[in-house]
Length: 175
Image (cartoon, rainbow, N blue to C red; front, side, top):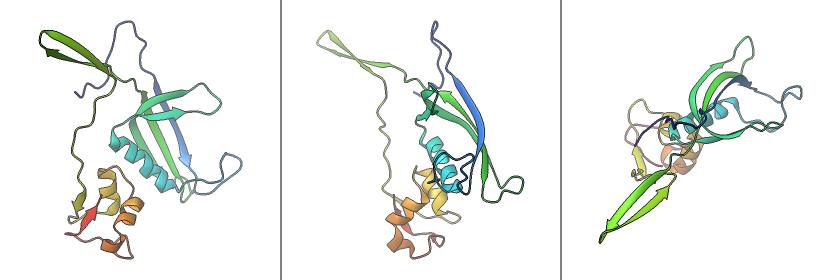
């Protein structure tokens, strides 16, 4: 059941969060709180993977009471704006996520049992391998299957060889 957003009379509206910022290329103590910054493109890939996974993520803003499960509604980025090579500027829109309670009723011998769950189990079969097609890249394949190109390469280094940019159609990769 892909119900999307739902409304229950009397309940508060789900919160929207939007902000823009940038992923810096290098640490700068005037605006960076942590010294070990991820590579800007790795940060972009991580957000895109979270979007593709279609699962909620946690939004926590330090020093505020903001701590919510959210879904990513939109993510736009612009590399290297205004003479800042290597930095990636972005805008992100998030929506509060609330799990929908579902009920399952089993009737046996005239007696009904009601089971309540907050999440539906994922029954889709996940493939174990992928056959490379013309035009594929490790990044494209990784995004499609909710992983990173780095992890995909690590699992398939013997198949791909020393250069991760040289995958060939017909190669079978382990997911």
